[in-house]
Structure formats: structure tokens, C-alpha cells
Length: 198
Image (cartoon, rainbow, N blue to C red; front, side, top):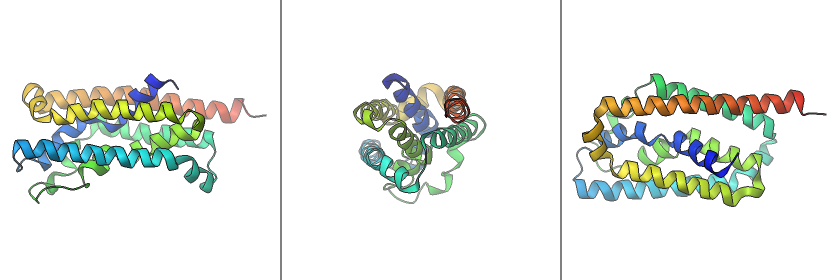
């Protein structure tokens, strides 16, 4: 996997367009200026969490004795399920009841909206398949995080420009692309198991 494809994969898994309605719902009672500060804080926390799993990923996989083909297959399945949810699910409904309860800290914005199970599994997958390229995976994570952070910081304006239906359409499009990436990852794992083993 190239740096560009890893960045795109991480961007899709972070699902910033799908998270915009969630952020707007959770932060609706917070003043605009403070809202920007909260979003910035939450995206930084999410980056630190994902970077931690990027560093610890190989050690966790080694301790669990999980092989690279197994990780590819499992990662493909997980990403496929996430993609299906992105296409058919309503992300903003997940945290509707969390709004109005004061200023959020870590949960639910940093975790699991940005640094969710799929994003954590993806960074571990990247490190598991080629730990020697950790600097590329870290750069891919930072690039995906930067783009996602800009989108989330502009969430109020994006909601005004696209509306809920437009944001949902963008989320569905990202889900379709992620579906193809998930299937490709799954097929690579199957190919390694059945055709590349001696």
C-alpha cells in the first residue's frame, strides 16, 4: 500500500463528512468560538490516540499471535461493515442523546467518532503488514487527520452549504469507495493464505 492509498484509506475510515452532523448535534448549545476550540482539542486527542495504537500495534499483534494475512482478512471485513453502515446508516442518530449534556471531553467526539474501532484497526493493520514503513504510516495518518480536522472545523459552514442531505450523500460516496478498498484488502488476505503460502 502506497502513502497516498494509506492516507485515503485512513481519511475514509475517519469519515469526517459523516461526523459533521454528529459534531453539530453534540456542540449545538456551545458558542461558535468555543465550539472551534473544543473541536480542535478533540481532533488533537484523537490523533494522539491513533498514533499510540500505530506505535503499539505490532507489539499488540505479536502478543496476540495474529498473522498478517489474518489481519488483512479481518480488517477487510471490519472496513466492509463500516462502509455498509456509512452507506445505509444514519450516523447522526448514534449520539443524538448526548447533546445538551455540557461540553464533551474525549467521548463521543475524539473517541469513537474520529478515533473509532475502524480507525484503530486500520492503523494497526498498516503497521502489522509492514512495520518498517512506520514513518510513512505516521505521515499518512497525519495527512488524513489534517484533512479531516479542517472539514470538522468547518462543520457549521459545511452544514450551511450542503445541508444534511448533501452531507449524507458525501458520506454514502465515501462508503462506496471504502467498500471497494475493504474488498481489495480481504482478497489480498485470501490470496496470501491460499496462493502465496508454501
